[in-house]
Image (cartoon, rainbow, N blue to C red; front, side, top):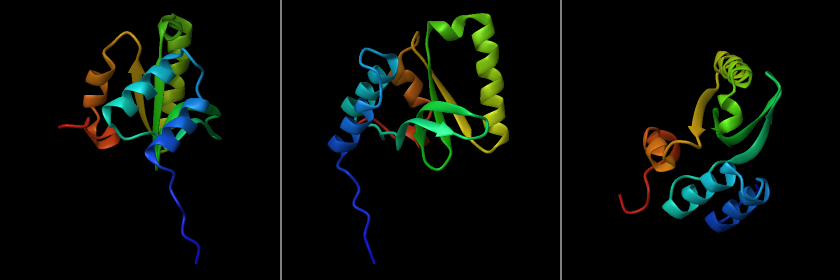
Length: 121
């Protein structure tokens, strides 16, 4: 029987960083997660078949995390995002949105069951 070897936290963070654009809000969120000792995502840019989309970060078994920035503030884009998020929820996913115009740590604190607590707490 083969045992799965999980990567170290540093290896996991490095892999996730390699899958997110440098200078992006997604990378900034990863840095906060890594530096703060929060639970790291299981995947970055995970493709979901139905509804067809790529989520910024995924936590098994069913949590989709979307990073939203200025583009999502435009009315048309925001409406499309809401439809997508509702479709994911209807298929059993939990959808979390982390906004770039709000404090990241405050947003993470709203979901300790997903992100855990920062180190030292």
